[in-house]
Every structure is written in structure tokens, then in C-alpha cells.
Amino acid sequence: YARLVEAGQSPAEALASVRDDRGLVDSVRASVTRVEAALVAIEPATGAVRAYVGSRDFAQDQFDHAGVALRQPGSTFKAFVYAAALQRGYAPEDEVEAGAASFTLDDGTVWRPSGGSSGGSLADAMAFSKNAVAARLTQEVTPGRVALVAERMGVRSPLDVVPSIGLGTSPVTLLEMVGAYGTIANDGLARTPRLVTRIETPAGYVLETFAGEGSQALTRRDARNLLDMMRGVID
Image (cartoon, rainbow, N blue to C red; front, side, top):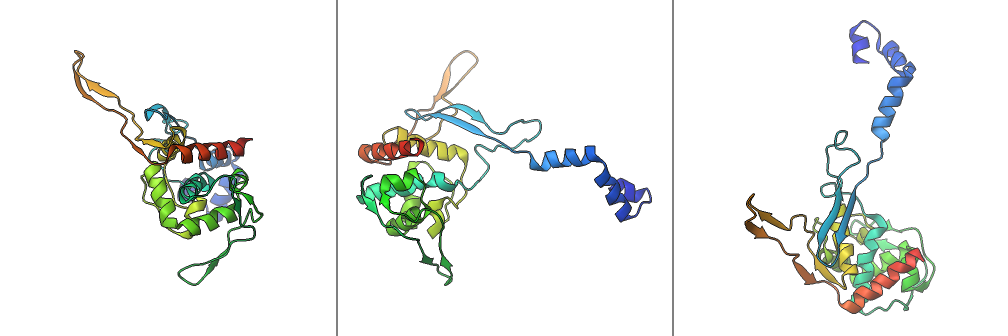
């Protein structure tokens, strides 16, 4: 477009020429709508990172979508809401309140999350990803508690402690979410994701080793109850 204008075409003529160039239009469309992907695989018992993919093609996108990109986790963040509820004394079979959720925010506006206003058990609410239940539980245990549980389980990004935190509105990285989910699989013991196990010289002298640092973020009972509830999603 710029070259055509510089060559003497009017802006309207240049734009029409660009639009008529199907090859150019298709190329631009492919570039701006190209879906990216990332993958992290962690061994929960040790925190060892077994696979790490930052983007589909480094030659095209030199950006780490696994450990740097901050994205809203959405409903995957609900695991921390239910973990906090289990810590508060809930059991998977406990009945939860039915009906739509409504919350008055600090600025006076009213927030009404949509989705999942029916009743049922805590396990059912997670299996069907009921937003209303997750929002009410977040308010009951407090957004600050949900954030604290997430941090203890492995989330390191600063979290927005707001009523919608339980629905995954605060951006995080894929790496920390996988690490936090590994805590559930590891009976509640959180392991720091570990990409390097040791550093040694060319002669084989070990300069430093790195063990998987860990802390008990959830009790074994709560972790196993949460794991069973998560299986309900697939079932």
C-alpha cells in the first residue's frame, strides 16, 4: 500500500489494489490469525520438566508462550477454588446452593456471572464447570484465600484478588499452571518446576545439582478428593 501511494496512486486506488491482490490478503490473514500453541510436561513427583515447547515454530514466533506469555487460565483456575473449599471443610458430596450468583463490587456495580446456576454436589459443580457455584465459593472462602492456595500450589504470577479470580480472569503462565496441577497429582506436595538437574564441567566434575524443592500445599486427603473431582470432568 505504501509503495503504491509513493508511486502516485491515490489512497483509495492503492487500497483497492491491495484488496484485489488475493495472495497478499491471504498471506496477511494467515499471519494475523495464526493460532499459537505451547506445551509443558512435568513429572509431578520430582518437578522435572520432561517436555517444553514455547511456540509452534521458533523461526516464525520467537516468543515463549509456555513460560513467559501471561494468559487468562479460565475455568482451569477453578481447581484452586475447590481446593480452598475442601480446606474449609467441604466434602465432594456436599450439596451446594442453587440459583444465580450476584455480587456488588467496590465501585457499586453488580456482577452476575452466567452459567451453572443449578444445584447439586460440589463434585457435580466442578464436573459441569458451574460458574455460579465457583463464584459463590470464591466469595465464601474469600478471593484472597483462593489466591493464597494457588500460590502455595505453584502459581507465581501476581494475582488480581478480585471476585472473578475463581473463574480464571487473572493472567498466569502455562508453566506455573502445569506445576500447580502437578501438586494435585503429587498428593498435595508442590514441587518447583526443574529444567536443569545438574551442571558439570567437560571432564565430568559436578559443579552444582538441583533437587526438586517441595512443600506440602494440600493434605493428601484434600489432594486425592480434588483429583477424584477432576476425574469427574472427563467421566
